[in-house]
Length: 88
Image (cartoon, rainbow, N blue to C red; front, side):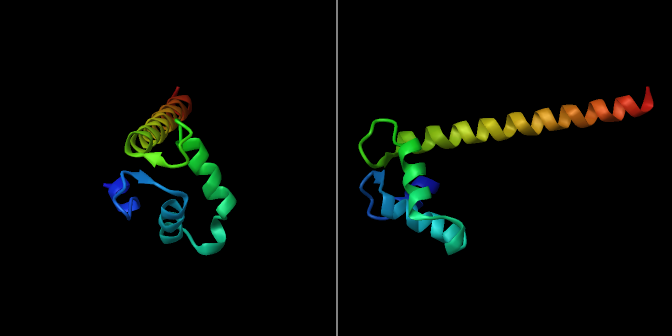
């Protein structure tokens, strides 16, 4: 699971440093700044603790997944409408 990989010290939360490590592994160094990581942490940290709990982490990724699926379905629908328009 992504959260357990990010939670390097097994504290049950993801810190800014742990989040930075994950982003550095996923993105080239010049692609994301500490400011960007801090912004992401603040967006994920719903209870204001300064860390991201597993619940906060999972809920955030569920929102992202849902958003992506909506966009895929919307794009698929639009493609179908384009096809229909060409044949009607």
